Image (spheres, helix red, strand yellow):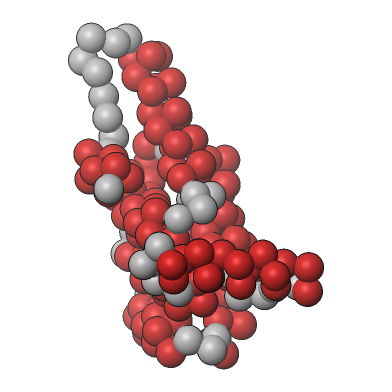
Length: 171
């Protein structure tokens, strides 16, 4: 999986570039991370969610604050509720996608979206290990309270794990 390799090698740098060009390269890598979180394939979104949290947890100081907010917002607003709420218009296309997924031998879409939600929560748990993330996560984590009542047990367990991590934080 290319995104897994990208996350493992982050940040890519070129010693032949000037510092300004390396900064532009780093910003383009953050843009790529945001784009890959919109991928239509569930497995890519899972790896991207975990990867973004891992990268932000380790390289928080490298990223500009607007990019950090943008990535965390994407995680909390979109991916944490991945395919959880479906309006009537989307039901037919959603089940059509499920049927195609089963035909292609992939995981079913309902189970997969739960995997994405759980991956986001596990990733945010890792991100909480970085004390610099606490002020931002203090604002966004309450928006995820509805996940405690998620139909998927894996999501509820991951949410409970986050609560245990938050409980140990002194600030």
